[in-house]
Image (cartoon, rainbow, N blue to C red; front, side, top):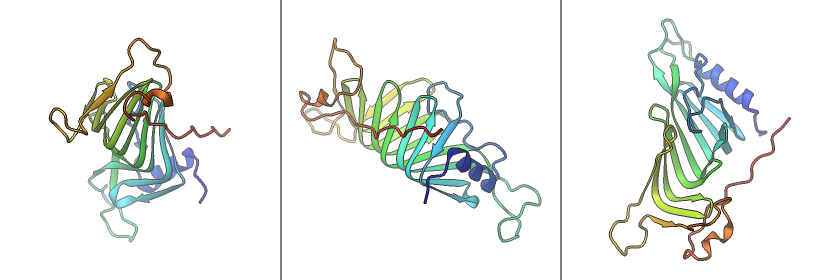
Length: 214
């Protein structure tokens, strides 16, 4: 199936889910940005009763200069009480009334990319109310040549504050939170050589950017 354009995908989401113009309003993938969120994928499936849109196949959510990439991105909008007189697809009353964005979930080869860093993980959840991204799994963060690793990363996209954690604790144990820092060196670009002297801890390499269609 051909990849739907962002306007088509958002149009389907707005029309089928009857979001009343809400769409993904309130999403803040980029720090302190009110730019629109542009979502692309190979396929879009909408589950009206769950206020859920499922983007599969190289899914990508772009806002300003920040990107969230994954195999699958699920967008959940808040479920509101049914509108008076509303009908579902079978003609019975009780059709879902979907409101503002609740959360976005990304699964499989997750990358969160900003101009200053690249974050890699297995699963990510963005919660609109608190503007927080939680990345879990094999989590690696690269900022220039500096690299950190753990099993859980919490990012507040409003303040820019981030916390890395691990499910392993105790001095000398493998798998604890680990950071390799290159002091007094240029931090431009996540160079592949940055892992050569860090015991194999290498920065993630995000997928190449898709060419922008005219």
